Length: 483
Ligand code: G6P
Image (cartoon, rainbow, N blue to C red; front, side, top):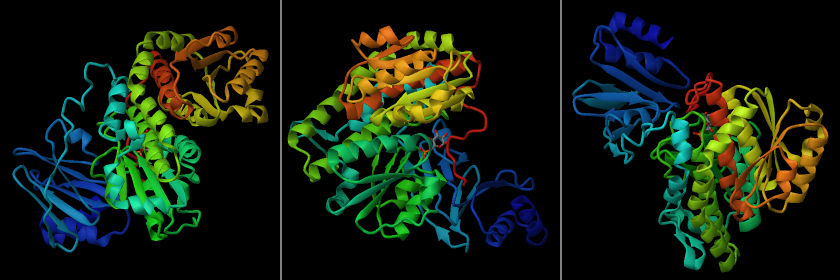
């Protein structure tokens, strides 16, 4: 439509820029576009309304993308367009103006991800590289933010709203996809350890349900890209209704970062694989920090703060231990590769991990996988169990262990194969489950950070053995900037 409209205006304007601007002034709606005209092939015009546009400023060359990652191998200097702005690029210059033709002056942002970081670093797929980066990602998310001797967290991005946060009575976390499952873990963390009521909402539902909010509510968006339109619209809805808006976002300078009042960066580096892995680890780590931060404002003891801080610092080494056993998981994936369905079971902190494990398998293997609260199994999913319907059971030695074991008994009684993710040294479970993946012990609130990794590896090897395109699964996009 836009292309035809520009063509229409070219008939009278005879000038690409003017015709493009006229066309953009004619339309309503959401777009993030790049235009090129065969009469002026050295010129690109980009415009943003709702969907992100990033310009890359190189040496004698310029770039347009919807996210900085593909630009980084060429230049680190980027300019983020705002809604209602148009950019004209030629190899030698860039100009930005508004839809009413007034000029916009904006200094470029330097992105400190290097080109190599944005490449595969020797791995066959970005997804594997990103899973393997887990320990480093936790360190980067934690860097400079823990005060272990005081059991506190220092989050620079929240300092400007620290006082307001003390008065907050409720948090609503909004997110989509993997970030939504991180949010569900955050709900357990914040309610149990910071004593604050939390609700989690899908970005795509929030603004359609007339949420009741006030200035004592914080709306916290979690997003890797910072550009997911549904999450962004949820933030805008929160703002309209007077809430404090916060973000846990990975992409520096993205729209959610710019539109929220304050926030925490993930510092996970670029994530290229469409199936999110390291961003999830980092989101959970940031939620752990946020829990200490808020908790210590409202009655968390110093001892408890210290305990969580100490465990957070131990996570990278523990995660590395899991990664070192990846060949075992590869073999296991081979054993189950012909299954057409999978049940993922978890409870409490590990229920969102079950959802996320199932999502990973669905995204890249295209087989049916279902995440289910172990307590809900008896209300339906158990009917599906038979010898061809395997279950991945998250059964670490925590407060839910006994219940999980009884679920596994029920599945085995119906001849369902079981792979258990269990705590190191648990010999009981190896008598019961067909296969066991062992994970080091940590405190319950942080256990999802470790337990999800075997599930990511399992999905990766499963899809790889099926010969599928792990990094670019069909029908999916990395940044979903449309409704
Ligand atoms: C897409 C991606 C998912 C991601 C979700 C939310 O569906 O494929 O991996 O979890 O969007 O993205 P965000 O950037 O907001 O975390």
